[in-house]
Amino acid sequence: MASKHLILAVDDEASLCEFYEKTLPLLGYDAAVSLSAKEAREAIRVRKPSLILMDIMMPGEDGIGFTRELRASAEYSDIPIIVVSGLADAATLNDALLFGAVDYIVKPVELEILKSKIERAIAAVENRKKK
Image 1 (cartoon, rainbow, N blue to C red):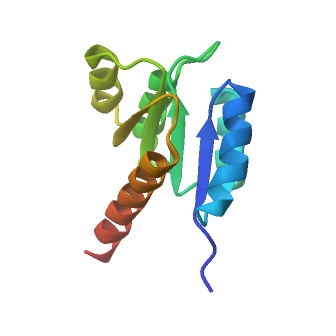
Image 2 (image 1 turned 90 degrees about the horizontal axis):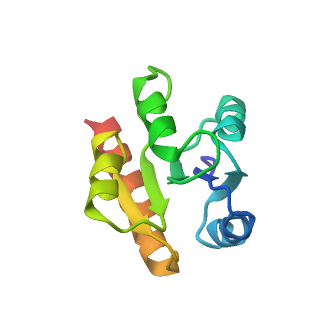
């Protein structure tokens, strides 16, 4: 049996990380969480995720900068990134998509929206691999 898809959630909000750790396995995914871009880099080296949920506003390095870095990496550029942010303005959404996010979720995260966006992003990657 193939291993479950790993979803890496990168968010400086501990309560949201706990939500992901509890919820993603219920949706059928392995979950890993990182409280910063630095932690996320280590997690990615240990096990490459199938998808990343990326917060934008984090202390130190923000999610858009980290997304840009991943897109520039030959090894990690194929990982779909869904930006999760409390910011719902068009400029932020545009920046996230411009720098390589495949989708966007506005906080607070709703379970059904999260589930459908993850499923759609992973299906798109699997369809590309089949071609």
